[in-house]
Amino acid sequence: MDELSLEIIKELKQRVPKGVTLIDFFTKIIPIKKEAAYRRLRGDIPFTLKEAQQIASYLHLSLDKILKIKEKGTFSFNIIRMNRQNLISAYNRTMETSIQAMQYMKADPDAKIYGAINTLPSSHIFLYPTICKFRFFKWAYQFRNAPNPLKMAEIEVPPSVRHIEKTFREIHQQVASYYISIKDLFEPYTSDIHYFMELGLISKDEVNLLREETYQLLEDLEEDISSGKTKFGSPFIFYLANTYFDSNYVYIDGNNLKGSAINIFGMNYLGSIEEEINNDTKEWIDSLMRYSTLISVTGEIEKVNFFNQQRKMIKKLHI
Image (tube, rainbow, N blue to C red):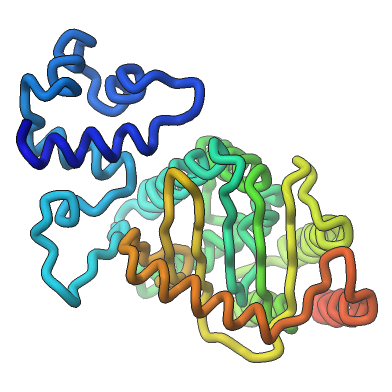
C-alpha cells in the first residue's frame, strides 16, 4: 500500500463518527460503490489525488501535511473569496463551511469552542431576523463597489439564508462554548446603526425593530450566562476581558476536529487546521482567559454592571 493511502485510511479511522461504519463514512465522502470503496480501504487500489483532496477537504485536513511536502515554517489557511456580484452565494458558502465544522463538533461529546469576541456572539444572533439582515447589510455596504449604496430596505434576504442561519444557531448551541468578551460588547454594533441611520440608509421603523430585537437578544444572552447553559443544555461559559483585543478569535477543540480562526472582512474568517497555529491560538486565548472575569453562574456584581452598561447603549437607539 502506498504511503498516501496509508495516511488517508489512518485519518479516516480516527475520525469516523460513533455509530457509523468506516465504509459508510467513506462512501459518504466519495460516492462510489461499496465494492470499489472496500478495495481502496484494503489498499488494493491507491487513492487518486482528486480523491485525496476530497477527503482532506471533508475532514478539514491539510493535504500537504498528508503528502508530507509541507516546508518548515510555512502554514496553510483557508478563506472563501468574496464575489461582489453575488454576496448571497458567498455568504451561504461561508455559513455552510461553518455548519459542517459545527456538525463535527456536535458529534463529539468532548468538543469545545473557545472564542474571544468584540462583536455580538454568533451563538445567539441568528434567532433575530432584523439583526441578521443589518449584519448582512453592513457587509454588503462594505463590499458592494457602487456609487449609490443600497438602503437596508432594498436588500432581499431569501428564505434559504434564514434557514441556514437557523441551522447554524441550533447546532452551535449544542456544543460547549467558552466566550471572552470585551466589556462594551454592544458599543460597536450600536455605533454602526447610528452611522447608517445618519446616512439615511436605515429607516425609523428598521431602527425600532433593531432596538426591540437587540433588547430580546440581550435578555436571551443574560439568561444563558446566568444559568451557564444554552437553551439546548450545553455549557455556555462567559468571561469579561480586562483588556481590549482588536478582532474575534476562535479555537475549536475536539477529537474529530481541531482548528482556529481569526475574523476578517466583516463576517468571514481566516481559518487554519495547522497544529502550530492551533496551539498558538489556544495559548493566546488561555492567557486572555486567566486575566478575565468569569460571570457565568457567578460574578453577580460584574454581571449586573455589564448588562446595565449594554442596556444603556441599546437605549440610545432612537430616532
